[in-house]
Length: 115
Image: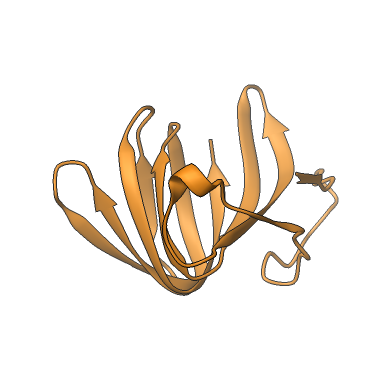
């Protein structure tokens, strides 16, 4: 994970931050060869704020408590209760600790996370 300093005097363009990608663990991949990149930007008390990106494919995940804002891309988020959410630029969402999800990424998705 990349760590970038974001203090009171810093402004960053979240879409321009270069992320180092790694393959998603095989046990999480349903389809494709997706990779993820992440950069932690700041910590406020016990809350981390950062940028996360995933390339096309289908993956499963077990989530942490998080609020996110999608900056770019397109994905379908499927929750264990069967509900689906289309994620596109401007989408604000919430994930809960322990929640099992499936991410079908149609176009590389980048988001700001607060967790």
